[in-house]
Each structure stands twice: as structure tokens, then as C-alpha cells.
Amino acid sequence: MDKKQTKDLADFYRKLLEAERAGVKTISELLPEIKDEKIKLLMQAYLRDEGMNCHILDSLIKSLGHEPGNKTGDFVEKIRALPSLQEKLELLVKGQEWVARQIRYNREIINPSSSRIFLEAIKIQHEENVDSTKTILNIK
Image 1 (cartoon, rainbow, N blue to C red):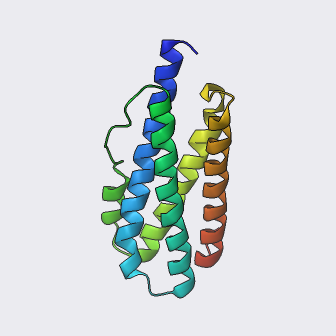
Image 2: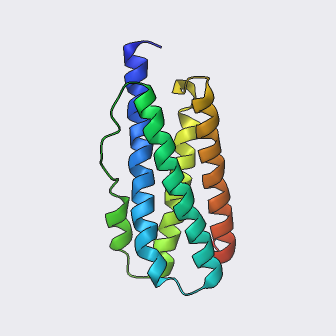
């Protein structure tokens, strides 16, 4: 991989890392508001997944010889601006869909090593989270 490809891949991973950090922060803030036990358990699983994804992406960026940075995506503010828990959870679902979509659309820049497997696992995890949340929240 040449320098430009490596930089592009690190930038892509960094964008995902910022989104995962936003997920951790958002879910951490939402958990105390959630009274429904099924939703709370699901969000706790999301939180665990988002945290693990942060570690994976951090490692992938460093393995490319780049710094992960410390930015968090602006998704946190978008969630905070919504008036109801239902709306916040629905936007959280859209955020999960966004991450999965980004991985699908950018497969060609992901080098064919273990990083591709890690990213595919993150994509599947987000897709499963979306399906589970849509079922619990009755979102079509």
C-alpha cells in the first residue's frame, strides 16, 4: 500500500472511530433515562460493542503508523438536541446504520488482511443492533 492509500485508510478508520466514540458517549448518557429493561439490556450491549470497536479502530490506525486522535463525532450533540427518548433511540439506530453503510461503501480501501475481518465484524454487529432495536422499538 502506498502512502496515499495508507493515509486514506487511516482517515477512514479515524472517521469510524469518532463515530464509535460518539456512540459510547451517547449511550452512556441515555442509559440512565431508559426504564424498559429490554431496551436497557440492548443499550448496555451496544455500549460494550462501541467500546470494543473503539479499541479495534485505535489499534488499526496505529498499525498503519498514524495517530488515532481524540475527536468525538458531532452525533452526541444531535442526540442531545432531541426532546424525547424515543427520538434519541431512533436517531441512534440511524447512526448504527450509517456506520454499517460506511464500511460497505469503503470496502475497496480496506486492505485484505485481518483488518477486513474486523471491519466486517463491526458492520455485522451494527446491522444486528439495528435489527434488534427496530424490533423492540417497533420501527419499520
